[in-house]
Amino acid sequence: MKIFDRIALILTIIGGINWGLIGIFQFDLVAWIGGGQDGVFARIIYTLVALSAIWCISLLFRNRALED
Image 1 (cartoon, rainbow, N blue to C red):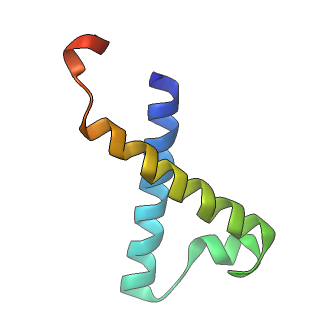
Image 2 (image 1 turned 180 degrees about the horizontal axis):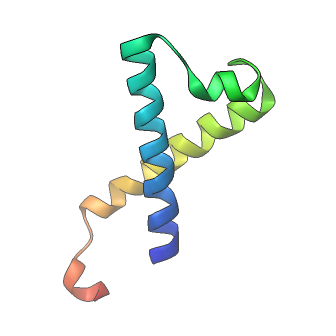
């Protein structure tokens, strides 16, 4: 599970940075790399980031004492 947690956190961080770029500079890095917002690659990245964010919700409710 720890590997999924790390991957999810990395993708969520990427999503947060992308949202920051959109908010500050009006620049969508994922769309730029993926050939526009409607590009297949960009849509895959958006979907993976969304799934990662949903996975990270579970991190809030886990008992860390059991995992160590």
